[in-house]
Length: 411
Image (cartoon, rainbow, N blue to C red):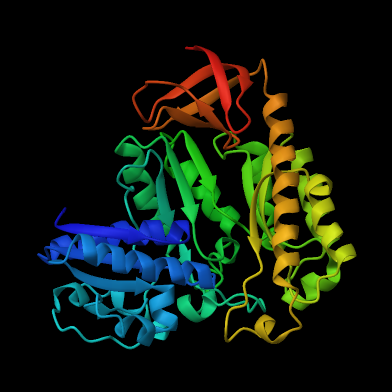
């Protein structure tokens, strides 16, 4: 076993933080350590985390296991009670370098109110692109979401620190940087300058001229500012792909979720951005079977795939999280939730197939990865075959295999 092993669950922000935690533990001289960076977005995520902890201890009985992340923050007693777990660190405590020097097997209390912004990371091992965590936490309270209780209020990294990190990453040879956070479009609201995400994006592209690609992780369409929209229109290095936190397509369900956008807002946003950047591709999160969802309400969500022109879907069967308002609402039958999720996935598969088919005969610029595939500018996966990682190459698309594009030529 490597001296420090990290098991990461959940979002890209966890991915960034996991690498920072691994480095902190190494700097503290820790050995025979397994860090479990947990996710609390669903009950299934918590179950998988606990299962992985048990398996890790069976396979590495000499290792100490430290559990951190959102699930550990929200319910530390759940993990403290596990005999396999040596220590539990809250999301606030894990940012303290001293936490990794300390060997006491007790749990630190949550300290989110005092927690600093995320640690900026300069690249993720075994990944071609680099992720920069520019924000954490969330000030909104969607009725289905437990994450604000695990991450605390929105907190942003000062722009100067982000620009320095972006320059370093570009100088190290990273071709693509992905900006990530819990609520990315809230970036800067807590800073004295009251910055917006669009201003940050333009500043990164201006101060890191050697960076070939800048990409955004999931955003909230209703918070997209004018600078961000103009950046998509004017800057080819800002990649033409956005993953949207839509969740549903029915206005009554959106209100019960306490989302801040309407169905019309989502459709209008996609149409407007497509006029500004005709080649842009959209992905989205959609929840199937939210409490009180009727068949006609569900059909509104399914129709949103076509109305917004969505290509890449993340479909989540509704999972009630204890402590959230949605858990107290009238629930949809489990079998109905499962069926609706399957229907959304089928509709998403059809949308992806249509997109793949439309790429036939086109020439695309692809960033190669370590597994013989790569990503085009609009985030479509492309099979490349044996090729060194982190190369930008032009390819001609011959067809697809139903999930990714196939090439004919490379130049």
